[in-house]
Image (cartoon, rainbow, N blue to C red):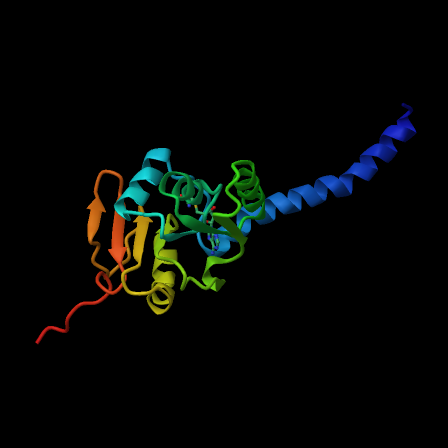
Length: 189
Ligand SMILES: C[S@@+](CC[C@H](N)C(=O)[O-])C[C@H]1O[C@@H](n2cnc3c(N)ncnc32)[C@H](O)[C@@H]1O
């Protein structure tokens, strides 16, 4: 290959590399701007979260910010529940969809690419979250408006300020809330 060929090849590759860099940057930065950075829960934590919520086959589990899909996949495989993951990062959406497909779980698990604040959550019976404190705060009103009383909300690391957890795993920092119980207090006389 002559020098001219090499220069032409490099010039042709520049836009491809730039597009790839832009996709990766968008994947990493958009979730930061609208919710939380990616940090996967350990397998132990995933199991604990679903155990605390007492997930059963009739449940519809929503993981808000589903990352690589580990929670929704676990809910489908080990609890036979249907599940929906909502994820802002397009690369993680593609990866988790591929995992779901390869595991033959497409009829049970759906991965939505989008902002969790724009999804209708009214079908959820269990909601799992591992976001940031301020994101949980911003989400409180939406959860109260859209979720049916009795829906279990399990948050890893971050509490919902002013809500009373019905179960806490102090060691793992997992908090279980029940809509209609945890978020309602009688007015004191
Ligand atoms: C800490 S990770 C948790 C991933 C997964 N739930 C787990 O426990 O392994 C948070 C995830 O939420 C996603 N995320 C943050 N804000 C979001 C938003 N507004 N809408 C959808 N996904 C969001 C991030 O891209 C990231 O994958």
